[in-house]
Image 1 (cartoon, rainbow, N blue to C red):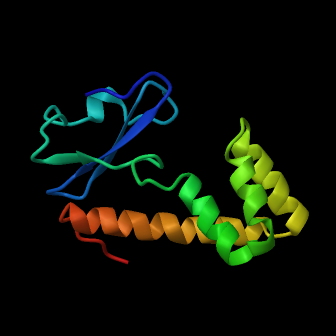
Image 2: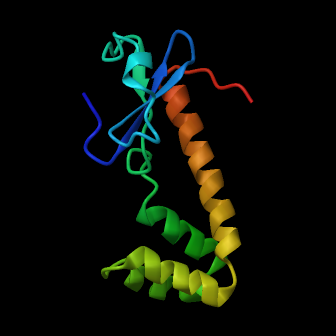
Length: 127
């Protein structure tokens, strides 16, 4: 399955560990002539999940608010009930001076989710 327009799929070869990018954005994509002919073989290749696939959406912001902004938790919940949630959430982070903490928290959560995904898909991770 090809990546939708404007997106990028990161594909891992389970046998070699080689990583490929399928995209319609020339600057990001592995050139078509370098993509393996059998890249659609699901036994050999697996597409890495994107942010949505890791399920790190609103719940992550709530977890952060519980830990670092407990007095603002109701405001965070309200923010995510309206349009422009992430922009408003980041404005709150700036007002409270915790934007860097958020980025650290988010990075750790992404790393843990990816490690769990790799474990679930029998992919060895080396540090």
